[in-house]
Length: 435
Figure 1: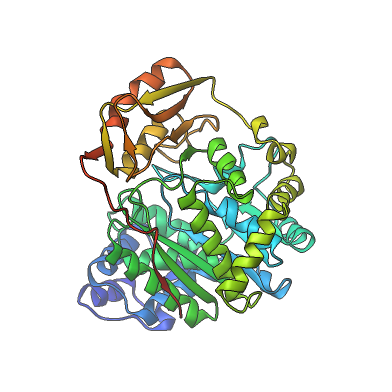
Figure 2: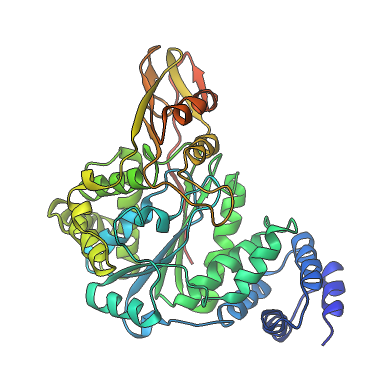
């Protein structure tokens, strides 16, 4: 088989067979197909696309390129949950222990943040001693003993995806629905959960800027799950403004603890409780939405949800007292309140701009491998639709020094648009895509 033949076929709008895709991924992973040929092929896919069968075949081939955990053969049902990322997205930190406290196992491998979207691993590492790098045996032991594990992404899972993503990043081929969908789903299939809930975000703070793009990606991933026998549901949710009020690492973990105690901001709490209820219905733990909501409410009111988070923290070497007493989590030395420059209703908040500002405080990475400061970040004092008078609190800045806190203030103010009239805010959850 000649790689150039496949490149020209896709360039001209043709399709690949299942065997051809398997051959491509196997030989590229082994290094016998050079980057320059794979780059040409990726651009052809970017321009010409792939049909649903090709996309599923590509996903399965990447999943099979490395270790497959097959967690559902040891624990079943076992759920996984994935978000396409955003600003202030601490949903996994709350949903995973909440679902586990409701009696459904959660086997989660998650990544670090890059750019303005934060990473769950970074937020968990705000806890002293917490280990995210687990061996396969450690992953399975913790899952079986505690019904929840929150591990860092293993390089042994879908190594073909790691190579392809690095190449896509430098060849202008990131924004391709088949390539995005197969990248996400290959790692999920390699873990091997029985049920998967996808949170596909759109808006100023998300990777997909429009709801139409998000819906295309959601449908592609749900179809991949269906073809692979993984029960997959996708929620399409808004990231037009930051989610919740906290943006950072330790401060987002504190907000997740508040959510598990029933004391979190209304928007992010509603989303977390909805996603937890959806997972209970998907796995048959609840027969309908009313029953699922009751189970979720009981886990929160009884304290079981926050206790489960402390339990998994301890199981992975962290200090559970920092969950029980969040004031023990790292805090920034400087806290400055940015006040509203004017009166009126907040019309919009540029979530990406807010995320970039938090990166300048040290809460995120400009390039892979950059160190982060778990203490820093932002706490929004008002959201879109709220009315403020000039001089009212707008954002609490958590910084390493006074100069950094001062330097980002003008860029933060530029993220806000105002209105003299009341604003009708949009719902967070726009659609649910089921197989």
